[in-house]
Picture 1 (spheres, rainbow, N blue to C red):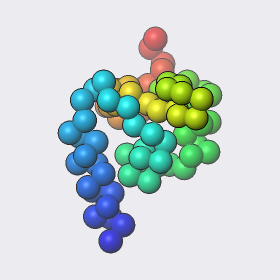
Picture 2: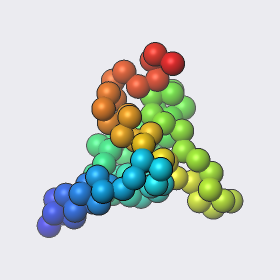
Picture 3: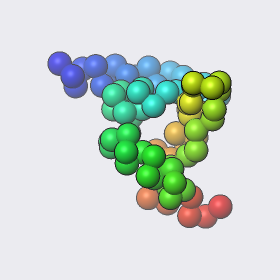
Length: 81
């Protein structure tokens, strides 16, 4: 059952414009990224994953376009800036 939910989240992600924002829970629980929140933040610190934007005091989110760029080349992300 969880696989169906992940597939649905991926389809919804694919329909979003590059300028949309996505929250951490959607990235992790939606199956968009294949790792935990701890790994996500470690990779951000290592510049191996896009930095999020602070939308308000309590809301942090990523631009969908930045996530798609990372998905296109996760191993090479941040190496040729």
